[in-house]
Length: 311
Image (cartoon, rainbow, N blue to C red; front, side):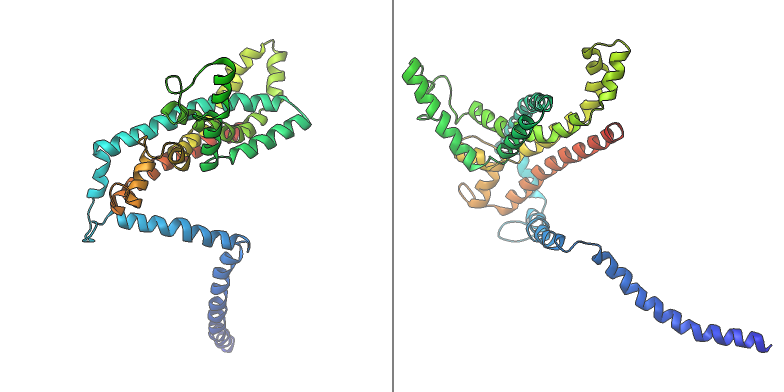
């Protein structure tokens, strides 16, 4: 009996201590989650919240409100069915799709060509591709106009040396063709940067095994190389499409809004050049963001598919 009373007494005395220990450990566990975040990453997280998450919440709110009254509505999303915005969305999809196909195919071939080189040449070409991938927006539009504009270098060169006049009947950098050319320019290096790592991870043993079995190189690429590369190629294409769909500065600087793209129409609604309707602009922006998110999600799913082969 004395032993059992001693055990109960010790248990009762230990319970408060265990409770205090659990209370102290709980904040430590919560603090350990924050402690796992590297300190240099904290300003980046704050930056993302302030410049991405907060504006997204504001856009969602504005897309559901009526201009002037502030009442809640879904009518802003119906604006996409209007001929102007629907035509602009179609143009944006067609331009992004065309530049994605041309830049994607050409960029994949350039990536293969770069990986066939070695040593200093490969490093030099890789650096050149990395530098040109950051050359976009207004600087790219100004460069295109300086080279292929009405008084551009190539335009004047063709006129003076060969008496061939590009303008106004043969070509215009300010047309859909010119815009496609400029879009392809910044899509191509992006495709190289996205696709080259996948090509470089193709195992040499596969091609050697195919050659040992008597298969020519085209059989290896038809039966092994291309099927494996199809998923990363499609993933890169999806990212290129999202990049082309959301491009704005280049098209605006080159055309000044004369060509109807959804990003330009959104800018019109925000700036008040034609009309001022932040609700419609927010709704159109969210629709465009949803299309881009679908492309990025497809790219992520396709990338996972290739990891088991290229790991």
